[in-house]
Amino acid sequence: MTITRNLATWDRAARFIVGALLIVLAITGTIGLWGYVGAIFVATAFMNFCPIYRVFGLKTCTDC
Image: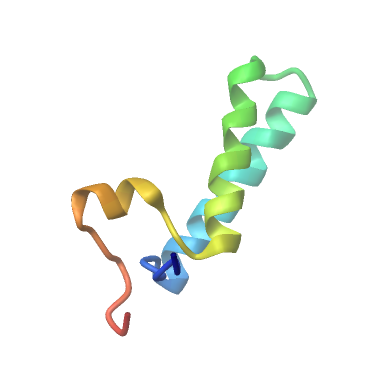
């Protein structure tokens, strides 16, 4: 099964920034362990694919 990308560049950047921020906040103890959910955001940014978008038939990219 091939994964078809469904994230635009701005969406990938936002996911990476928010995810990294959540991870840093969790590491520093500012927020609880739930901050490690940021790893999901970082992973989807690198994969250029969001499974939730696929379930709902969403795409933020215009050329995919």
